[in-house]
Length: 353
Image (cartoon, rainbow, N blue to C red; front, side, top):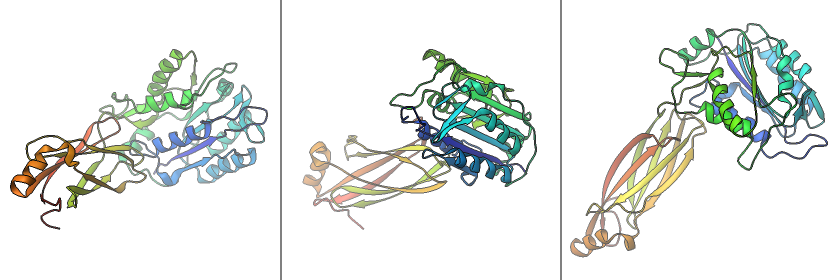
């Protein structure tokens, strides 16, 4: 059986250079994407070397992978750098040293992402072959697609050996472009029905975005057969909702999200009065840290914006509120939508507890 591992290396600080804001955050965000519901990596097979790591700490993380021997490896690196290497907290970690470590790990396929100035200095990297064993990939479609990929190292580099890349208040330009390309809502180029996006398709999308910013990323070893992510063409996962009425024309909702690990979900709760008037909604965006999470929302009706509720209470001593719960994914595609009808006494108390 095959395994897919992830190691993110990021350092905001390098001697003699200004402090970066997003180098470490960038590799963590890539890790969340690749260990999420659209990724192939189990969270148990992902690790990070951040917090201004030393060269010794980077060596230790790479040599741990050598002992684990994953079949497939995603290795993003982010920070300062030049044509000779990337920055650690105690100096430059050379690309020659990195190539040697990748060779010792011996993965069948490796995707290296270099997000540094001078990243193209790694382009002289040679193809690394190998074969290994760890824990199986749970999804058979992922395993089949990975096993069909060509052996070797694919390298996506933020810029040429003598050029610079940048970050803004939003994040590192190259990492943000990668995340956008990986989560693009178009179909993929791998699998029977385009279920996966390849490293070549991802880089093509990144190149267009980076060129628009005046930066020219480069890539080596692209065969277009290494699945980076499941294609983001439809909402994934499911949700179930339980609701009960509460005091003051309110409702308490429990929303269970399943199969949405490391993805954002927007929950919109809209009250509708007895005359069909849609009242101001309550909106919450939640992030699923695991495959099965339970989120709780409390919502209530402001009588000042609902003449319908006020009239029903005045005429009948009771009013009905319909609670519409709409759950959507990060692209605002619907996962589920349902309604609950609750009746309330004049004091705003529910008719039954």
